[in-house]
Image 1 (cartoon, rainbow, N blue to C red):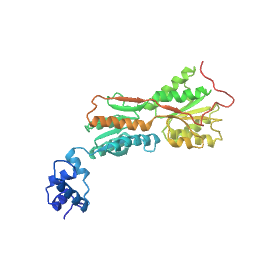
Image 2 (cartoon, rainbow, N blue to C red):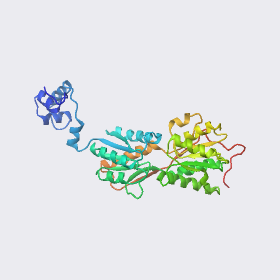
Image 3 (cartoon, one colour):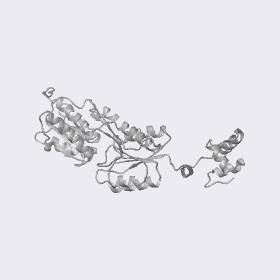
Image 4 (cartoon, rainbow, N blue to C red):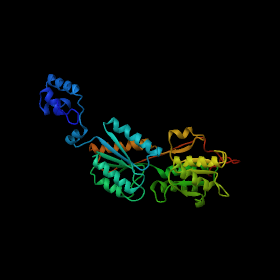
Length: 347
């Protein structure tokens, strides 16, 4: 017996079994009409040789790798971890593996990731667009495979997408605090111009307007979406002469930074400061101050994004489809009426 690189090939199986390569292939793939004896002989020979089918060889024959590329912008974010879980739920159930890549929200790095996905010949791509530029989408569409945007919607692009209703999420967060009686509310968001940031800011402004209030830019900070940035922004807000009684943070890591700043300043949560996070994760319920969050349904975004890819791959969908999921407000122990004040609802 001979093999390539110490690994048995289908030619080795065919030679040892005394059949043609075509017959061996049919037996191993349960295709074609073969006698039970021939099929059993090929299968037993393959087992003896520890033959493992080559994914590359099968891809050359079928034109498919049964691999989906997932390109996101922040592998440290619990939101994207849940998106990936949702993708894997559907992909694995349908015989696809997932190749996960992180662009770091950098356009040049995203383009390098696209090159890798192209080289790996993935069958489709679910991706989160970077916040600046659109060359990532341009290069993805040149791959001639189905592409679905998730979490963020590419501006002005007619492609499949699955996102949360971020405007409504921003509204829910602000409305919850306003109903509790808060009027001096700090806001920690992402980059100016980013689609999710602007949508959530719009929702928050809408809630404030319903209570006869305007956005106070002195209480607004734009930062990266990590814990340290949230901590720094919260310290700036909380060290003002008239500090906010509540802070709405765009992301869970930013909100955790707010909790850290409050602890450093000796403030009680929620007695001295209420905190709301703009997204959610399982561990948020088990923090020292369990966080009230706007649950963006990230796992469902991943699941439905993968369903759209499957519909494209099987030819069941041709026209672009957009899916907008309604977020849910999950109230926990990090929010309460401000000290000395009861809940005041709008008239």
